[in-house]
Amino acid sequence: MADPLGLIAGDGRFPIEIARAARRRGRRVVAVAFRELSSPALAAEVDELSWLHLGQVGTLVETLRAAGACEVVMAGKVPKLHLYGDPARHRPDALALELVESLRDRRDASNLGALAALLENRGIRLLPQAELVPELMAAPGPQGAVDASPAQLGDAAFGWAIAKTLATQGVGQTVVVRERAVVALEALEGTDEAIRRGAALAGPGVCVVKVSMAGQDPRFDLPAIGPGTLEVLEEVQAAMLAFEAGKTVLLERGEVVRRADAAGIALLGFAATGPEPPTPEEPI
Image (cartoon, rainbow, N blue to C red; front, side):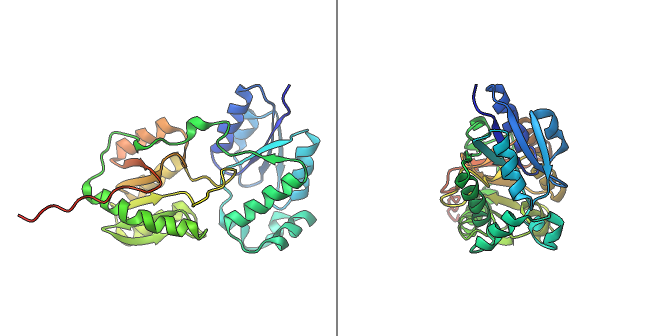
């Protein structure tokens, strides 16, 4: 029998999908979830579940090793805002403090890369997030029935290169555009609040562009779209969401497409180079 799979579960649906896929393959799933962050619904989808505070890194490692988990998947969001403020609320242990001291900066790639290295130094290999669920990677092209207008495609093409630059710097992966003007860039607040901020400035009809980082580490921080994303897009009356196909996780695809179609939101996947700018019409 295969060793149990360890699962480090952040917020959202992604950890549940990974747990289900692993159990379909006959693997026991030993999960570590975080208080006030991870979904309680995870309990029904795994064989063992331990609830920890974010700062209990030593306990996390001990829990996985005691269960015999030599492989682990890290999935689900840990909003950056959770990492700021009073660190005492996360109850950091000695290993967590050592980890923070080792960081050269506080970018996601640095935080998660340091945790991955710590796990692997203790005999726990971190798997690519989508290895067990390749079917969740979004395909290129329209995801629903709503077509993007030439103006919306122009906004997406304009915002794509900017989003790629932003992601390369480790700041965020989302840009909000209206009429070829950038109205919001994702930073510490995360994707949802960046969308809300952009729409508050530009009004209904914004185009949202979400990309992956160059050299994205497949073990963590893949861009993800799910019903929660659509809820925000509906709320602000966005016109379009353009995302990077093959590098973006699409959770609950049927529900996402249904809601996008009902709200008149174009949902399109593009290759890493992004959409082609529309050809200008010849003057009459």
